[in-house]
Image 1 (cartoon, rainbow, N blue to C red):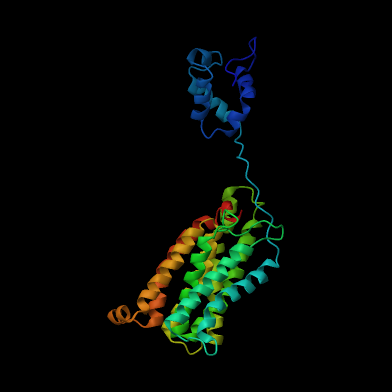
Image 2: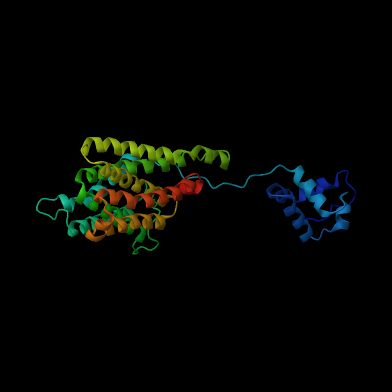
Length: 330
């Protein structure tokens, strides 16, 4: 910091002070920041008089007004994921969500009982755990937000999210197999839409300002949710045409929950995604017991939709603000 001008009396003494402290003036957020730095360098009221100002604050205001603001350097976004990542994500999503239905549909296996539900939860946990272990991009770097920090550690967020998803699908399969099948196949579209959202955000790295970036991403998540709901509706008409209204509600809510959980996970909050899915699964498991279901007088599929709706809305609220920030796509 240079607090005094060079020897002599230049025609514009403020210009010399400005040249000596240009970086400070360009990056200051207000004149007070410049004034504080000048005072720290020892420039007091008598020193400000040499620059034709009555005090340091007036001098700082002139310095601030003379220099255009330099925006802070932005960390570039990573290259956008290749298009082939979308069908691969859809393939994983279909496999991971159909796996929890196998115990209830396997010939000779348990059907609709507590064992099938528990096996479904375990299958879902294993599928997401496998994804966290193997989720690497084309450059070999880990792409999963909930990858374990240690080589032998278990990514508990992936384990909990998978177990919750598997439990919800297994409970739905025990009450409405058609809706459960449609919701499980909808896992393919949920994974593909989440991958598209990541790719779309990464492709906006050329935005000139943060405001422009946010304006481009403001409606991306609502459009992604609408696309998932449209895909689930088509699957329901193809696979579960005769399902009742409560089955349709469970299909739409449970089919959208994995998409929202994936967006929250990619935004760097895998724990929040896992807690929301596990909360929905725990509530659905409690309602599946004979006592609570009898007390509430709710149908099993209606209870599933009701218990999953709250966590789904919570995930939507947690997902939308980060989805408009560059940090969600790093």
